[in-house]
Length: 116
Length: 115
Image (tube, rainbow over all chains, first blue to last red; front, side, top):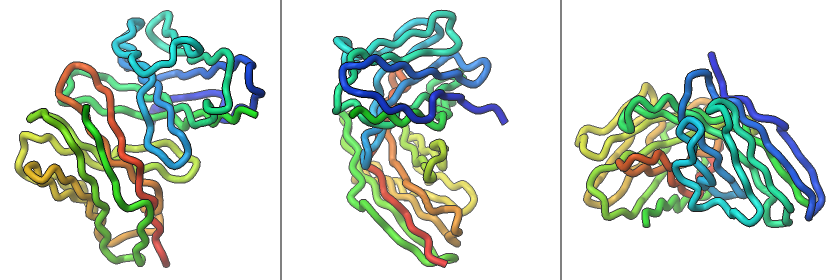
């Protein structure tokens, strides 16, 4: 069964350093989401792509976060510089998105980030 | 803005028994979708069940069923014949019927299943 792939699974970094996370969605899935999940809370959307275009990045802290999906397939989320409050699980999800009614988001295993 | 609230941080159930997880939400929209997701420890989140707001009939998926009360803005999940593999964090989520697919999640409920 096809799955969303994410790497790395774990990342420890020091504050002010740059970090990057990679996501490979299920083949053929045009819609890709990045969520941030702080420990003990539910995920919150950071950015949504439809193919290579950003649909919603209203909750993305654009002074330090950037996201791209250059060829409309895999995606990279970058943080520069990392801050202590960025420690969280970063989840990627993808969907086929034929219609909003039919959409199911499939989640990857996440990247757990710890900023020291 | 829409919000989702799960008021039970932790729940426990005996194996083979039934448990109900609560979820309430707030929205001014009339058409939307509700979901329950399961997040096992160190594993990816998976969809358990979905409900379309315009459907009065409660959704059912094998041992999982929901009690959708639209007027009360309540969406609870019932797990029957609980199994050890049901132990996980469960999230209730809301999605608008607008074009974006953004899911709004509750804080989650950790379910423990006792043998």
